[in-house]
Length: 310
Image (cartoon, rainbow, N blue to C red):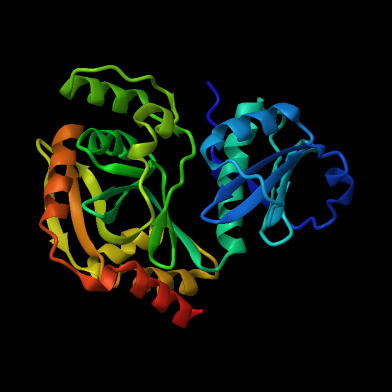
């Protein structure tokens, strides 16, 4: 089995894509945190699969920018006018693999289009009117933890990215994938059935389970698994190194670190050791219920702060 990773893309200094773009006749649009992007490609199946992947972010108005994915020598080219260009140079790929690679670079292009948007590689949920992020590595079982939290009456933004504008978390409802190990854990600790590996969160749980935008109030940094779920309250300085590793925003490294520091101001941070998915969900719910009322996380103050910063 061939494993495809976004890290296998290489930066391209080629800025002359006019000939390639002429063949990109197939399109799919998505609106993400208020930004409408349009994928343009010369591969019809890529456009179809991308549209399916972002069904819950369908857009009808004119795009704010276009992102191109085209067949090129020895592979494929990925580019837009305002973000880095990338190349896949390791030969042909099936359409679903091309969409996977396109997805990785397109979301980054959305973030770079609007300087007020940032993201954390994290599952994102809402509970007791508080937006929470559960941050961890790609194989850290974030999706399994997120699904268990939804079973505990939390509402969901995303299993993959906490997409944040001005301190407020917005839905990122890309179709989610549950690894086999996560699916086994979910089935082991609660009776029921799920349909891995591709899930539409809105279809699975209904529109009422999708969270409305709320200020980020709590951050859980995943720190492995244990015999049971445990939480440790940590300060923002302790959480910062991990968040910087999983944080994406416009600008250089210093800009991103500065944005991450500002984002964590007023956010309650925890180190989370996973138990079973349901134990983990219970621990997260308890921690959120115990948070003190904090007027600094009101939407109006975050909007005012964002206006001052920009």
